[in-house]
Length: 303
Length: 246
Image (cartoon, rainbow over all chains, first blue to last red; front, side, top):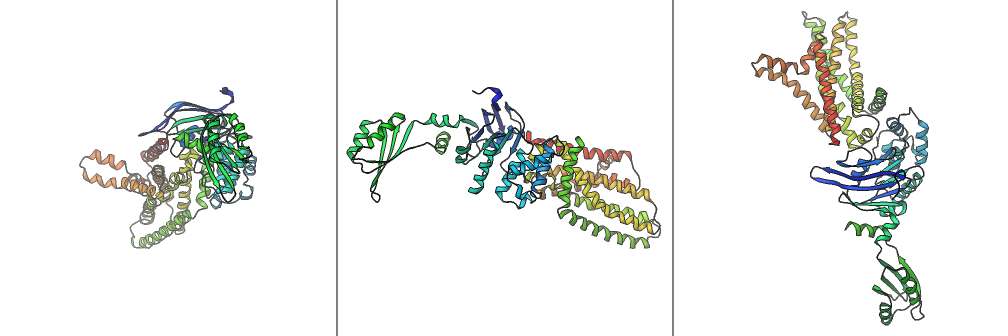
């Protein structure tokens, strides 16, 4: 457990009840300073509620939370005045969020940081969705908060824009701690060092991404391509190793056999298995371990 | 500092308003109606030889200004919170260093300035009268003060209604109904024989107090009435904004 000075957010037993339903049920987790923390969960799990509470927009019903430093928040629908220019908008946001009188250098800095220089004089309403999302992120960081909370920053964007927003988030990591929610599991895999998974208002799992994936890995999925694979080879292999299943697909066109092997998790088995498949009468062509991805994790946990 | 933050919002709101066509459309409509009415009252004044210029022109003109703003105020104030809610920018304001009360003041002042802009066009009427020797400036002054107080009351109602919904049409209709309803309350006075009750109902309607101003009477209790009216609806708006925390 990281000590308190290293935490940007500490949440303990936070609950939020709306009339007739519990949006959050005593959730507890923490976000490390300087990290990108992914906040995952299906629709209606309580992600947005948690983020709104953290940014101070709504109070929790019970429980405590502590945010070290100021918070910049990008809600699911970016709060944009469509009839303002990008620059005017950011200056306005800065002036209502900061005590300092007109610090327009900060605005210029944020504009160049978020790649908005080419559109700073244009009306926000006329910009593409990708640019509007950037303006949304810019308004969250214009008053230089220590902590940025982004609620689904990549939703509804095209693949190019998604990549750009991802790069921007990575760039922001240098100066800020970031908590962001997403449906794009790929985003989370690429960006986050830690994740929290929430479902029905309860934390399913929280911690470093790698150790969570390791923790649920009880099976070893191996894909192999070999030149030939007879029924005897199969029986031999099944009796030699602790295997759960071996799936054989013959590829007549390419004159090879694809094997999908599920073994009980044991790192040593990989070496021995590859040696076995390297025999002359089998002829190993390819041998890869299929890593469990976040999607599987997500499905497994949410079930 | 408190006032400075309000002015940031006022400036932004005014920029929004004066860069959009609504205010000019409403001003044009208002000027057309008022000009037409002024012309007709002026023509009529020739035949009313016993009435003074104040009785024949100024008093009815200001009566009409007040009535027209019953329609125009809801159209101006409907945007205030409803649009912010729809664009989900209200959270941006509420999450900032502005307090709820500062936001309400900012919206109120900017709306009031827009209405003063519209009313300022009517100043040409007393000036035209002055050319033919009209000089009862005290009545003109108190009438303008009366208009100012009564639009303040309407705007306060408008802000409250706008804070209830994210639909501008609903906000404007609701405002209109509330203002007109409170005006029509005076008819209810006929239904009672209780003198005290009748007085109370009469006192609680805007036109009763406005009338005094147009006649050139600035009554202290009318000023108290308008301030408490605005204050009451400010309080309701504040509660409505805070209700997100309930």
